[in-house]
Each structure stands twice: as C-alpha cells, then as structure tokens.
Length: 415
Length: 104
Image (cartoon, rainbow over all chains, first blue to last red; front, side, top):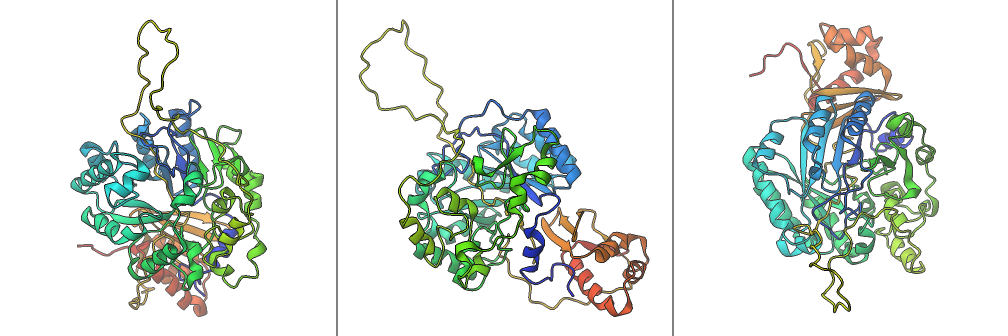
C-alpha cells in the first residue's frame, strides 16, 4: 500500500477528478494590457480593462488564497509587469505564503528587476519565446520581441537566477526548432518549458494556420520521449499519450477541479484557455469572494462529476488521453464529449471536417488593440484647424504570453 | 509537469529509528483524502493518501523517532514497512529531513 507519490498512475486521477478544497495553483491574469499583440494570445490582450481589480482588491484575493493554502499562483496577462503595482503585489503574495510564478515577454526585466527576482526563493519567472530565431518568433509575437526576450534572459542569467523558465508555445513553424530551443535554454541556465497551442482568444483565428500538422505532432512526441528529460510541458500534451507510452503527467483535465483562472476584472473561469461565458463560474468581487466561487459554483460542481467518455468511450486510447482538452474542443466548435481536434487517431480532424463553417463559438472578451493604422487613404474633407495629434502607438506590437495549463495544475506532481 | 524520468536508482531504506521533521519550506494542506504537500524550494508537489500518514508526518517533530510517531498514530507492527516506504519517498523528495543531522 503506497501512501505517497508511489501511487499507481490513475489513482491520482481518481482523487482529483472530484476536485479539491482549494486549487493546487491557479492562473491569475493581472491585466489585459500588453506591449505586444501576439497573434495567438489566449486572452486577446492589448488594452487595459478599466474595470481591472485595484491594488487593494488584488491584496484581498491574495489574503483569500493564503487562507485556502493555494501554494502558488501563475501570474500572467497581458504583460503583468505593465501594472504599476506589479512588484508590490508579488512581494505581498510571497510575504503571505503564496508563491508566484509569472510569465513575461521580458520587457521590464532589466538588471535591477533581475537581481530582485534572484533574491527570492518564492518567485519563479517564465520568459515567453515562440521562435528560436527572430524570424520565426517575431512573425508571431511582433517585431523586436525576440531581442526583448533574449535581453531579459541575459539579465536573469547575469543576476544569478538559475533555473528560470524559457516558455515556448509549440506551432507549425517552431516544432523543427526544438533542439535550438533546448540549446538556447541551456545557454542562459534556464529550463525549457513547452506547451500546447490552444485555439483560445486570438488563437482561435490563428489556430488553423499555426497548430502543428499531424506529422509534427508525432515529431514532437518522439522528441519528448527521446530528449524530454528536464523539459517541462505543463502536462499540456496529454492528448499525445495515445501514440503509445504515456508521457509523465496526470492525464487529467484540471479545469475547475484543481485549477482555474482569475482574469483582470476578477472573473473566475474554469481554466486559462476557457475565457468564455460558458466557463464563467463567478467573480471574486461577489459575496464570499473567490473561496465561494471555487466551492459553490454550479459550473465547477458539474466539471467535478466524472465524465463517461462520451463519443470517445469505445476508443481503446481513452484512458490515455481522456478525450483531450476541453477548451480546444470548445473553441473549434467540437462537442465537449467528443474527440480533441488534434486527436492523434485522426478522429478530431474528421469531426472538424464535418462542421459547418462559423459553428465555433467566439471568445467572449476581446481586449486586442484596435486595428493598426491603415494605409493612408485620401481624406475627402479636412475640417481640423490643426493637425490631429497622432494616436498613441505602442513602441512594438504586443502580446501576452500564451501560457499553458499554464501551469499545469499539477506541475511537478510526482506520480 | 516535468517529463523528467523517474530515477531508477534503488532508494535507500528509510530509518525509522532516526528523528525527522517536515522541511521548513514545505506547506502541508489537509484534504478529504489526506493531504497535499508543496515544497517551495524544489517546487514539487506530493500527497499523503490517508489521515493516518498525515498524522504521522505532522507529529514527526514531536517524537524521538519516526517509529514512535507511527506508534502514536496507531500504526500496527504489520503496517510499519508500508509506512517506512511512504516516509522514504517523502525523504527522497526532500519533504522531510533528519532532525539532528549536521549539514555541511
């Protein structure tokens, strides 16, 4: 009888399927503001939402997380460091026994910030990079994004922060760069973390062109099996387990069971990839705060009921992939009890092909920058007395780190 | 989660007669099935599968040995080997440490 982590795989799934008294970790998008505009941004970030939680409201959420003994939060956005109170909130969280792991495109990680981060045991950093070369990266994340990320990594390395994360969303254009990503991480003393592209946020539009081809999924799986030691995955590739031997991980959709998302205005969603009213459980500003949402939300209760496998029940690989990712199915228009759109057996492709165009739901909230300035067109009439002041244009297009189950609800869980 | 392969080297047996305690950097959270443990230094998570092993782990620091902690929690002689295995796993993941050991 094993009582600790020596338990058989599968037992943990049974324990966690019904949910926990509190999340193991949760993702908290602090702001929708971002200096980038990545084409696959899962939270459609760009502009700050005026209803954003105030500093005091954020601290009250941290107090709740401390009482619930949530071990750590994965902070993202948007670009979380764009909030003027970002460092104050990080310090408040760690002083209250809530660990912080935050995702950044690196824009504010200067030498001073890097030294401050290196001084804390309770803070971890993920720098987002989606191409091992400027060409591949900046095509997705915008001009200059590669240089920004590498400068941040150099600052972290020079400050002595060993083991920070280099976080990569795997796409059709960077699967072939896996070895280069690993070499880049090694060069900066970082740990490589790769996660799955989800069709969430702006990613819903980018997904058809960006998601790995079936042959690339196999390439990725083989790479993980052969070279994946010390590579983190956020447990986000469990749909690939049906290729054969299971990748380490729990193979459980943690949405509403062991993980959830708090967005910048305090809305609580089942998972970071499911920013849509269908997965909205409540708001931390409501009576009872976050604890009530987690414990009493009708949506979360439903998600904690064991599923029966639906259309996938008769598939011999169901135990391995458990039907895949709920958000990926939802935003591609597939039924939640059917196959994942990237089902390695090909059932998802078939299901997608059978969908009528326009059937996929649209993400609920879009904070994208308004369209970039159009090409100059003839102006028919001019009535202004002085030249209009130029609209504020961010230095670079922006985007928020597309994060994975971002943290895997169960990151680091020994099984 | 890490894809890191599970170490294949044989774990050393757990010494029930030494004094142990939970590492200061470990947070322990009771759950209906037992408890979750999170180590802020290694950033690893582990779990305790029942209330008895939770009682043992929680009281390790109050007893002169792990064997005494087990006895106080009502663990019978026949079950001791299983508890030693469980505690050994917690030692291997740095969740519990020897109390009197002088670290270099």
